Amino acid sequence: MHYDIHGLTAPDAPTILLSSGLGGSGAYWTPQIAALAERFRVITYDHRGCGRTGGTVPEEGGIAAMADDVLEIVAALKLEKFHFMGHALGGLIGLDLALRRPDLIDRLILVNAWSKADPHSGRCFDVRLELLNRSGVEAFVKAQPLFLYPGWWMSENAERLAADDAHGLAHFQGRENVSRRIAALRAFDVDARLAEIGAETLVVASRDDLLVPYTRSLRLAEGLPRATLSLTDSGAHAVNIVYPQPFNRNILDFLAPAG
Image (cartoon, rainbow, N blue to C red; front, side, top):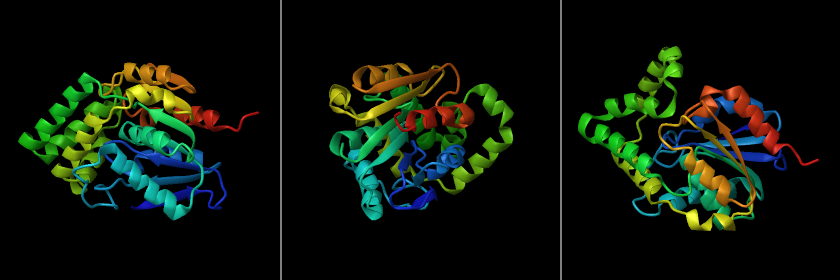
């Protein structure tokens, strides 16, 4: 597993581990790094099958196998307790870890995540796979921003999106890896077990998220015993990129020491 450490470097420094969504790149969290690095040792990583980690996503194992990859990083760094922030798929990894290794998770942050996939999200996954399998990688990559950002933001950031398209094409994770990662998203279901998660949790959601209905975050906030809901009207699926400053303030406030 390829990971990077930002900010504080002392082994006993307060630590937060960040896990991205379907794209699987640690660079997804770039708008958060500087703000978090002032107070934390920040760990980002590329998921298996993605970026510098590379390799093949296992056919079996689903989200639990992806959480095992995080545990590999945890063992390498000898982490005993850390905060965890996950976006979408990364949030599912956080939920799995919180259930299987509650001793490790201090505070949990779930960004546009879910305990069980919504039928609407399934429709979006179907469309993305159809694009990939019938129209090719370029169509799949070019469609990705439609599921991530508001239309106005895409209009204002056309040059950035063009650069992202080029990078996505050059570093595409492969049809098989994408298909297996989407299959893991579909199969994940811990809805009946939310009450078992004792970590203090911040649930972040956007009402205008096209990919994941915000009602899935309402369900998380309802089912998790120690959850706080942060619901915004705008920002879409990648709210941490669209509105980085208020997002970062929200995260830092949540992670502030009690008292």
